[in-house]
Length: 253
Length: 302
Image (tube, rainbow over the protein chains, first blue to last red):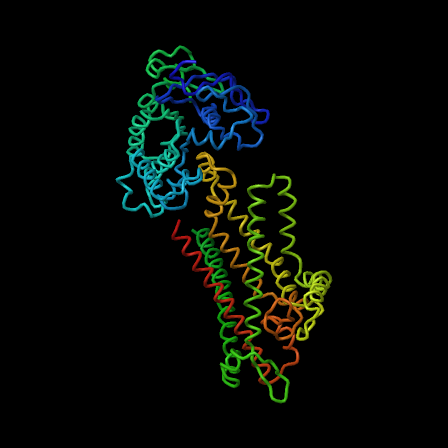
């Protein structure tokens, strides 16, 4: 296995009951890069994202075949503790979903459930995480206030900070800007540039321009299949597959 | 144009009907309040506030009558508090179990069963308490007080029986209100917690239940209200003597006081019973004010 591969997926199939939702997806995701998944609604891109931290385990009736290696270890092995996996592979959701508690407690939540109690350590983690999500300056005077009082864009960055606080290696983002205004969106896109220096970022996006702007690699999904995967510039400039070309030129989707 | 006028007539009529209904409700609350105060205060004057509220001797029909209801007030407070202390944790955990832990088929059986508890008439609870709890309490009583000269044997009709019956009776309120507020917590909060590597139990107790706290508090307060206002069931199991609320004493609650004596009371005795009703009414009002305050606070939080 190559050194710079963080996640390697091999022939992954996923079924919702009888519905074959992912059909033999294989993909290598590079370390310290941004990888984007694009495709029309219902193509399986979000479902595939959630197989990477096993959030699909929570859905009834799901069965999964195939292998997903994180640093060479199969995360679907019988002995894998999902809480440890999810600590390594953090997630940011489509809708900003801060907990109904203070900003500080939101960020400290993850470290606390993983057993960190020391106030000074927590203070430090909270500050670092908020800085990492480029929101520290905006909220430093109101850490004890409810996170629900912030704007949508700020809330989403709180959620990113919350994910950073458990010191993950990979950050999955499921359409993180689809509920946000353009200014908040561009802030989060800038943030991704920063984040990939320390983390491996995987993002699902509805917005092809966003993929062009932020992603090093892009994967195009259609009807549960991975149609094409490769360097973002190449994929958008010289799509190898007719379906990719049709999609990126706006002929469907 | 004519059609429009007709529409307006319908709208207006509807509006008046709604207004009349609302006024009726307000009128009912106001008239009850006024009536309770008008009927409940004279005894405070004729007997004296201190003698009535802060003395413990209750001999309404003696030649030198005494109307101290302190024990009765205390019994209601202690009995309600204890039943809530038992009923709320059990109810909350049941709600958590039903909504978060149990698989769907099991929940589909347990959930209606809990709802059925709410539909059972309180006199049935009383009967069961009478048939099952009291004999058991009597056995315990005989063991605990075997060598006691001072204990007045009750045959098992005591405070504990009443507390247990009340705790069971408030369960459906606590369970149903808590469960629906836990269900109303956005799945995305649970997902966020799990995605941070929290376990299911951590997620339940650190995110889901706190996020549902306003609804849970509502359930608790409604439960308190139900326990405080219950008369029939505890009238059957609590014994009914006016005593200090100790576990194995036969006791009398504010509600059972009214039930057991209103039928024959006359004169000052009757006035005092109205005062007992007023005290109960004030308690219930306080509970409701707390409830509204809680709701306001949690609204502001969110």
